[in-house]
Image (tube, rainbow, N blue to C red):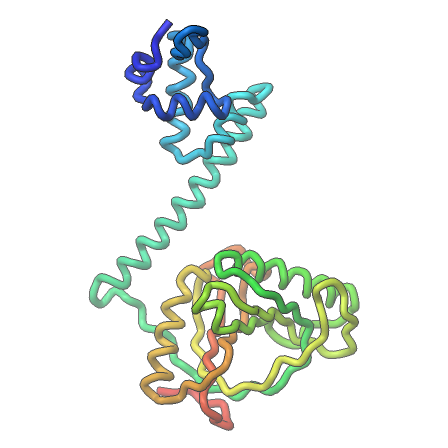
Length: 276
C-alpha cells in the first residue's frame, strides 16, 4: 500500500487533487486507516491516475473523465473520448483562425483592403420576426435557432421570403452584452403568429453599409471600419445596428463564402449610392 504522499509522488498529482478526486468519487483510495484516517493506495491505481492526468492535460471536465472510467464497455468509453477530441479540434480551429486574424492585424501590409461602404435608404418592410432579450455570448446560436423557426413558419404557411434575413440589435447588446434582438425574414402575404414568430414591419432606415465576408468571429473588423467611416463623415445618428444575411449557415457550411451586410444608422441621405 502507498501513502497519499507516495502516491502523489508516483503520479505527479497533488495531495489536494487526490483528496478532491476522492470526494467526487473519481479516484478513491484503496483503503482508509480507521484510526488515523490516512488514505492508502495500491500500485495498481497508478495507471488509472495517469489516465486521469492525461485527460486533464486535454482539459477534459472531471465529470466526463468519470464517465469514461465508469463506461460499461469499450464502445461507450470511446464515444466519450471521441466526443471530447472533436471539441478539442473545433477549439483548435477557432484558435488558428484567431491567430491568423491577429497576424493580419499586426503585420504591416497584410490586412486585406476593406470593401467599399455604401449609403442606402431601406424602405419599411413587412416581415416575420422573433424579438427577445439575448446574452451576447449566446447570440450566434440564438440567431440560427430563430432563423430556423421563422423559416419553418413561413414554409408551413406557404409564404415565400421576400428578401434576405436580417437582425436588429439594441445598443445594450454591445454595451452590456445583453439586450434586445429582433431577427426577421421579409415576407408578403398575411402571416399568422405561431410560437415565437409574429408579423411585424421592419422600419425604414438610412444606413451606411459594409459587406463582411466570412464567419461572425471576424465581423468586428467590418464594424470598426464602418464606425470609423460614419465618424469621419459626421453621419452617425442614434438607432440600432442592423445586419442582413446574404449568404449564411443555411446556404453553405463553408464559412469563407458567408456574406453579411453590417448596417449603421446615418443622417437621411434619400438615395442609394456608393461612397468613395
